[in-house]
Length: 576
Image (cartoon, rainbow, N blue to C red; front, top):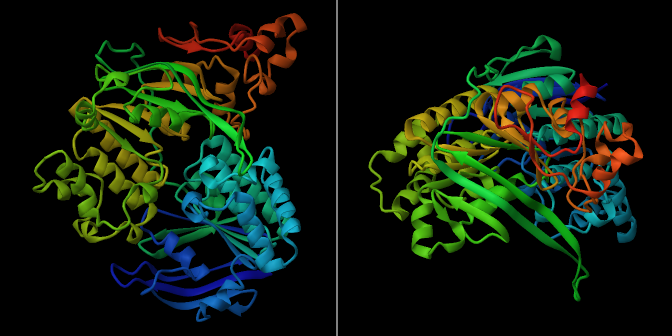
């Protein structure tokens, strides 16, 4: 049975080229159609046209039928009765899509009450059930949390819970996993599969990641420049432009100046309860005593699940201030003793690319002004620099006149990268810098970053969930779990001979859930460790009582691999 039928759909914006050019497709009940294409191919414009959410000034022609009923031409009030009930959407950026002043549970409950009625209490109970269904631990408490208090993976699960709240006939998912690590990505896709099974909904999955689409969709449609250029079964549609997985032959770490040194860094957040009389109810150990260094022209990647402390680590470094505990030394300067004038001067040499470009770019400024702002702030002549920056990140000169909302997600991320490169910094902090880009654009941007690293002597601290990207672009990798580094070493050593069981689980892309607090005594990973259950009571005691410290191991060819595990040698022997 055909649930969603799109015929000759065309989308024109008030400014810029035609976004969608005569696209047609059908999706049946319980079927998943994957739509892939490079940034700017028209995927998101297509999704917004289906939902009736295009900006003012857009012109749409063609036909969109849901269960045989035409949606194009209906008023916004009429479409409001359809959206969220019969046709639901999971947006690419959950932080922007969720209301920041209402709790996650209240927002889900609102979607339930608007379309299904019932009491507030019943709707809130349903919200908790939905959060449990999508795999949120301690759902009753998480329902009382605000979006900014949740990790990226949890926010996306809240979005999916809202989408399935009223058993829709069709769900449009626009890049639902683009900014998630591999374990949470697998979990989110499992949740979408469960939603399809429970509701029989037709799924339209939009993504730039062919691997995600191929593993989920029944059919795939490839878009380019607003057109559908290829359609067929998922197994028959190939993906071009995959990242190179070439290995390095030299595993020795070059002796270069250290540009960033972190020693015993700690960032704990108190948990509060109550509305009027708030009292401390616990502590979130977001970062719990980590140490590492980054050398000139080196890339260190931080990997781990959503909520493990990767981005918090970047933010603590970026503050260039006294940390809660520990020390941060940037380019020879202890951040605890920096004066305001020196801190401003140091920021020219330390730049960041955030995970969410739509939140980090000023929506009221044109791209040209966004790129010129850091130059003006530090007294650097602008000249042709804006045009040069647009060129190196693969954007056209005409993009300089646009506002961020007029760009695709991938184009916004390129603007963010261009802004970070404007002052040619020495240390670049990269928080999922290419998660919003398609595979070919990822390759181009990472090659650009690597070329700049060599030419300018840049050092990178890279946070990424894409393990293939880390392997192809990083020199060293640190694996984080629940605020601690459990393994660190060269990419070849850690990937070739992982010493910690959690590292092996990540490399196997195991669908593991998020964890933020309620830390156990002893080793934090033991509840999920495949080797812990094989140990005797005597051998388990260190795991139960002591959090392991990083210790040097000699498993690969490199000299500097370390692992935080009491029984790493026994674990490796058991694996082999």
